[in-house]
Image (cartoon, helix red, strand yellow):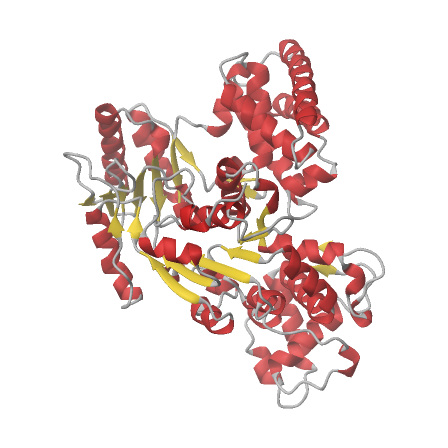
Amino acid sequence: MRVDPASWRPQGIDDLEGAAWAALRAGTASVTAGPGAGKTEFLAQRAGYLLETGICRPPQQILAISFKRDAAANIRRRVEARLPEHASRFTSMTFDAFTKSILDRFTRLLPQEWAFEERYKIGFASRTEIEAFLSDIAASAPSGLQSDVYSISAFTFLPNVVGAAELPSQPSEQAPPTTAREYAVQQWWARHYLGRANPVLDFVMLNRLAELMIRSSPQLQRALQATYPFVFIDEFQDTTYAQYSFLKSVFAGHGTTVTAVGDRKQRIMGWAGALSDAFTQFEHDFAAEPFALVSNFRSTQRLVDLQHRFAKRLDPESQHQKSQVAPAVGESPIEVWSCATAEREAQAIAAWIASDIEQSGRQPSEFALIARQKVGDLEPALTEALQAVGLKLRNDDAEVGKLRLLDLLKDDLVHLLVGIVRLAAIRGGHPQTWQDVTDLLGRVASPTRHREVGTQLEDDLSAFLSELRSWFAEMPLESGAGPDLSEQITQALTDKLAAFVNLDSAGSKRIFGDRPEDIQVTLDAFKIRVAHVLRRVDSWDAVADAFSDADAVPSSRSIEARASNTTRCSSSAWTATNGGPTPATPSSPR
């Protein structure tokens, strides 16, 4: 049943600010906002508005593009929670996943000279390999271009040079290069792609091929526009040259309504080829109407005022946000402490957290230590200081195989595997874990989640849990088990879990990885973490909690680790700030 646009109301929240209402009802829009303004929530509400009012008519879909898998999953979960009956028409994926899906599904549409005989592989050239390539081609470059080729940075060559170059439909008829950049791009494709039966592509190259394919095929372009008349782009400030060129080729000037959301002041991907001012270019090329959200749902006004002082240094035109958070009585939103040594700083942080926990009843996981340096440099002192007050530290920057611990703990596949272990080890009392596990299994088995599939799925899960419990009983754990034993048990457990989830299925590959190797990378990291856990627990009941260290204080150099309370550490100073609706939050300027 369609809702009249004039009477539509937000789902799951009380209301929207005025600018958000205007942007929600607009056509193509550029929506900028600072931290805590609810940018992802705005996109979820705009999806609700378009789907429930019938402005996005069945079978049309909304395409939401994010830069990270967890961000894509976040907005998808919000839409599923608010609009379960419309969620099948909301597609959320990363930029790389979208462009890869285009190339995989429509490979035959590549122009003849760009076609490859078999399948491509995903690979990434190292900086050393790029430096060797540039040095080699510089030596044989046309007269007058050699010195300019030598001056091309290997660090930015792929994102800024290859990513900014439009591929010709017929390379054999391409005019001779007149600049070092044109020459380097032509040589890169000639040496790494053209004429190869199994080319090795990174995501910049994959993006360029997908853009060429769409530009060369009006039918494919029309099909994409008809399928996705509404497109959302999150964290738009980090859009690269290649990604923007792709968006422009597919959607600009063709009737598609595009909503770009982000924060002009949080551009952090310049090294990876991000545009210097993506929003200004987008507003010009897509005739987008600009909007600025000014509410802040994360920080109290005093902290917002401090943030604005820094924001003005980055952008004199920065709008002052208005906090929607009521300050807690008796709590200071920001404090600056100066410590003579790293050890004293660690002791001060530990004492502050312990005192706050005792007074407020908050959990250790509600805090986060954000370090300016590598967390490993501060870890020994912080670990010792926290242990002295009965607390633990979790280094989210620690490398687990090829993943950071933070990324491993946020991965959907890991949530599924750990959830199954928890359900098997601890009978009853975990309805949310059961719901999370069955939801993920349902997404793998059937995107539409038919009732009969759900019933069979739950029966299969119950049978497997019974089997796993029997195996746990035959395989008791002992704290302090040696590496060989823990690795053998880990491998056996992982094999059982992988077989049950059926990680070789198309559904698993669609849900758990953008690239063919993603699932294996995650599994390898999962095994490393489990083996480490098995050496320090003495029962299967403790494995799931020990895997996530949910009772520890998390630490990271990335703001992704933020919790309700955030402590940002330096070697001699840190600041307590209010990072959420109630807590007093440590954070640090230098």
